[in-house]
Length: 285
Image (tube, rainbow, N blue to C red; front, side, top):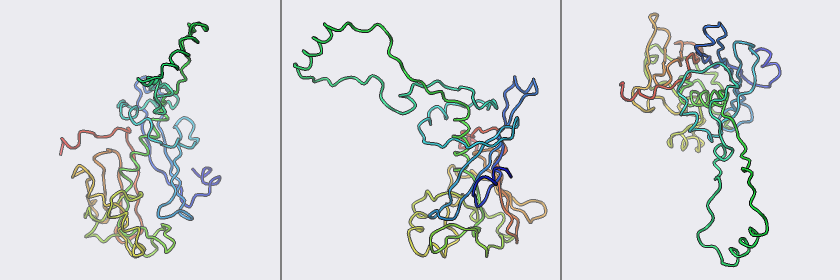
């Protein structure tokens, strides 16, 4: 990560987490590989929210490479993969036709109403030129484990990454910065779920409306509160035995944990899990 930081102009480079590679065969051979994820942030020059860029590496080389961006075109394939990760980024999970990968139609049916003259011309052409017996070539795009890793990382980032209230603020230029006046949550607020927010572009309408006003630079609650996440009870907020550290755990993505130390600027979070979402949480609560 130090080398990665040296060659990139990030304002911050954070360790994001680890996704376990649990392929049974590789575990038996002692070749199990885990995925390590780093997150680069650029605040300066970006309106209202910093630029995020993810990097990945395996425990086999620890050489970080850019994580593919998400365009949402393979959502169906990603949601259909519910097995553990193998730890092999080139492993093909689904073989897709190009049309399936780009949502383009395959062999679209012609219009039902066709001019008689066009039909006549086509029939004459068919009589002169024999129909090819070769099968049409279909270009394929493989959906690999690296594609799935990218989807899972972005999904976890969107649903988790918690920060305490007041840790960030907007400048008059609407650039997000760390709040130098932030002194940490009080001991009384550590266990209050209302004091924790998503570190992402606001997705609720009231927060979007707030950012459109000039008063947003004076507000500390500019992010979406985690208390509004569905289903209700998706978060566990506790205080450690010293009563100085608040611990926030995601029940939707088991393995994500955040912390905030009272009376200090110290807070953070990371994900250590198998990359599987708890889709049955609503029935468990």
